[in-house]
Image 1 (cartoon, helix red, strand yellow):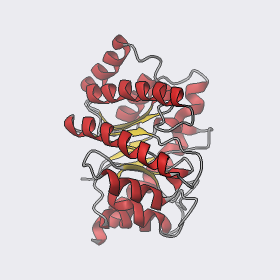
Image 2 (cartoon, rainbow, N blue to C red):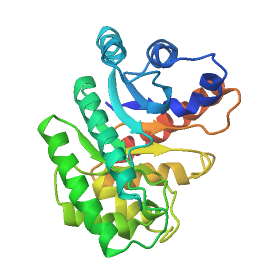
Image 3 (cartoon, helix red, strand yellow):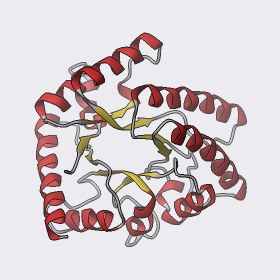
Image 4 (cartoon, rainbow, N blue to C red):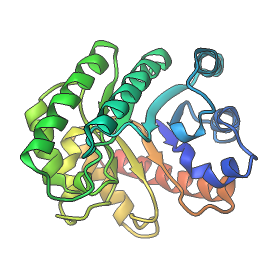
Length: 260
C-alpha cells in the first residue's frame, strides 16, 4: 500500500490570511484528504515551547497521523558567519528533539550554501555536521538531510559527494523532483538512491503528460518506498488545487505499481 502526504506549505496563503492553523492542516489531512501522513513546514508552528509541541504530538496520536517529513527553515548548516552557524546549529538541535518527540520519518535541515560550487571547507563542515545529526536521527528512528531547493543542493553531484562521505544510515535528501540547476536530465536518477522523502510540484514536473509517471517509476526502481508527497505553490484555491494534484499523483503511483 502506497502512502501519500501534502506539504503544509501548499496552504501558505490560507495560513498567512489566518484561515488555517497547523491544527487545521492536520484536520484537513485526516478528514478532508483521508491521509495518514503529514508533511509539516515549521513556518506553521506558532511556538517551539514544550506545551505547544506536546499539544501537536497529542493531536498526531489522537488522529493516528505520522509525520512523513518535518521541513525546517532557519537551521541551515552552513553560513559564512560562524556566529550564525552556531545559532542555526542550536535551532537544528531543537528541531532534532522535536522530530524525536513527534516520531517523524524524515527531517529537513538545509545546507545553506547559496552557490552551486562548494569549497572544501564548506563540504567538510557540512559532512561533519550532517554526520552528527544523522547519528542522532538514526538512534531515534528517523533520517535527516537537505532539500533540493538551495543552490548547492540543486547540484546532484554535490549531494552524491556529501552522501558518500557521510555514509550514514540516518542521512538522505528530501527530493523536490526535477528541480535542478545542474545535470537536469539525470539529477533525479543520481539522487534517487539516497532520497528519503520525495515531493512533487507541478511547477517542476509536468502532471499532464508522461513525465510524472516516469519520475515515479524511476524512484520506485531505485528502491524508494517513502511517502509520495505533493506541494502546491499557486497560493489560490488551495483546497481544490491540492485535491486535484493529489489525485493525479495517486493515479501515477497506482499505474507505476501495476506495471511492475
